[in-house]
Length: 225
Image (cartoon, rainbow, N blue to C red):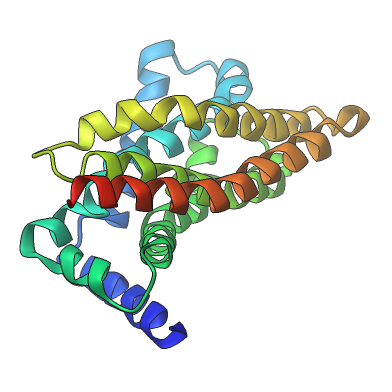
């Protein structure tokens, strides 16, 4: 079972590297969103520094939504998903492999790129460790919650927009706690607010690790009948 899980994960990583358009497209969209902010609100350094954590998290969220339709749609169209559901690997673990692959090819590159883009928004260097830690903790939740929307819309052509609308409410706690941790770090960690926000963000991520695969597997079984 472990060999099948690793083989499925490696297959998704190879397909993402071969086809492209996953992490690269998300990072490019991340860059476009961050670069457009100073053009929209003006190049005021103090204002950009205040809104930088929120804008970086919003850009991370939107960039992650862009690639949700890649999770199951291609496998559904070529029949691979039917074979995966009939294989020895439980469907829940198939979903876990897909979510981990999505995080490694989309979420992780965005986390690495965040500090560089933070410089464009005049974000203080002292806030970089807390920002990256919060994104590293919260980004897996975006992938494991995203598989729910991808599973619900797997039978719908071009269901990426619908999947984004379905999972967007579940992303709000990740956004709130992630921004709270980064802003607390920017303010000098007052009263342990950053630690509290990180703890809540970790709790949301742990909950998504359990709920996401189970809900997505149930949605896939319903759509593939």
